[in-house]
Image 1 (cartoon, helix red, strand yellow):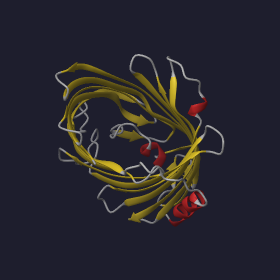
Image 2 (cartoon, rainbow, N blue to C red):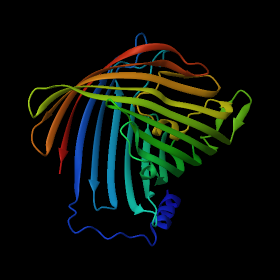
Image 3 (spheres, rainbow, N blue to C red):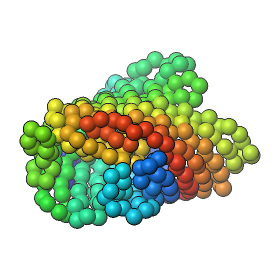
Length: 340
């Protein structure tokens, strides 16, 4: 963690922006409660509250925090086709926007994220993710058909450590290509590619059919299509919308045939719940999903808004040595956001 902070200090050294006199700090506080059902004959019923906080301290500095807590809505016994979702994940992120890089159109920003993960089995991990992002999207000519909102190169470094249970560490170095595109007819496309390498010690060492590995190289692709359409406006405060998302979340391949599950693969996922069963020793794995949603939104005033949603996810329930057993999972939830 200390190395992450030192690196961020180097990145920020000598960079300062004049704060606009008109700028007013602002933020939001949100709570979403989601209920997941079983996925066919797979036991995946889960309760998931998520608390988020964002604060823009200045035009350059931003802060955010998130706490996700899940627990099983059935008695988990470790039987086949059961997913243990008794889990807690708090995180805190500080970000800095340098603005334009010299006289170019490239926007430069950096962030540091601190996260802990716990399954309440005396085996918890802590991670620090440092990345710096160079966004080239302003070089793309404007047109009515396809427009990038992000087209960025992002070098990144991750340090992970077991904070309870057997000792172990992981160091990760990599680079990401991060893109998001606005498409015609209310569609958008996110397409991200990552190349990174993990170095393992202790409990993080991965095992495979040919032995154990103290390092592994990965390529990861995330690609999902999103659609948003207001179906009906009851009045100025209340509306009903149809939303859809679906795609690869993610596809991962490695030079090691082993039971691996790198931090970046789970941290960058669009969905919260991964497939139920991760099985075998493998060199590649993927999660493919479709998630249609109906959402009812209500705006109380300029500060407070509510929403309720129902949705159903169709995805493979097993990944790893093979991807199979496609099932529907019903989901529903409510949320509230306070702007300040």
